Length: 77
Image (cartoon, rainbow, N blue to C red; front, side, top):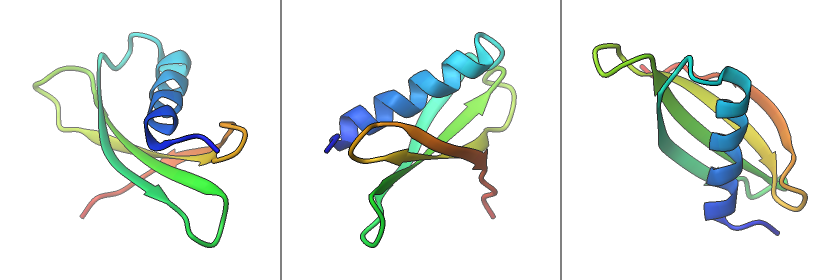
C-alpha cells in the first residue's frame, strides 16, 4: 500500500507530466483515503501565475499499485 506522501507525489508528477510548464503553480489541496474502496483521492490546485485564481483537479489513485485511475475537474463552491 502506498502512503499519503507517495500518493501526493504520484498525483503531482502525473499532472506535471501531462501539462508540462503550462501551469507552473501546482498546490496540494486535499487528500482522502476512501474507506470503502482501495483509492486515494487527491485534489490539486493549479494556475498559470500568482495573478490567476486556482482551478482544481481531483485524481483517483489506486492505493496498492499507485496507478492513476482518473483525473477530473473539481469544482469548489
